[in-house]
Length: 185
Image 1: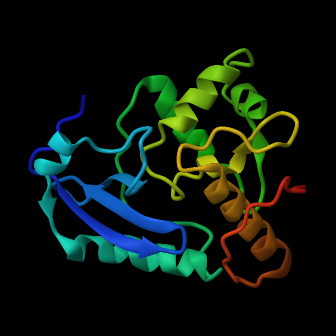
Image 2: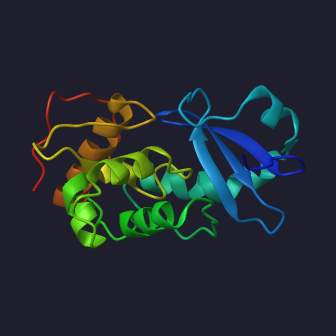
């Protein structure tokens, strides 16, 4: 388990709920989670070891505010992803999925040269420690249905719908939504 003692943290509001940012001593983003996440959220013991520093959230919040306003499609924040070599490869590949588009878990596995690793890709996506900025929400099931998003399918649907609308119209108007199925490219 990754040690959290002495790392800095802050929380801030987004249209999708309160998010917690965690940075290392050099200011690199280690985690960006929704505060109530249970899949890979912080334990009470881990939270107790963190140093609350509200100002460190400002650069992340500024870029997320621009994203939710439809004005930012590519984030420019330093981050450090901690995981296995395969997880790192998946998280790197996630960053190549264009804004407003989706890939399937199978396409991700093919992209990585491991076509039979579909479930492993899904697991790595589920353990992505930097939500939205490393866009695991852009990966969906083979049939086009929304599957497996540790922050909740309602958030995944909202993010995909929002990015699709901005991509098609250039207009940002974030609204929390839960469509039954998205028609994406």
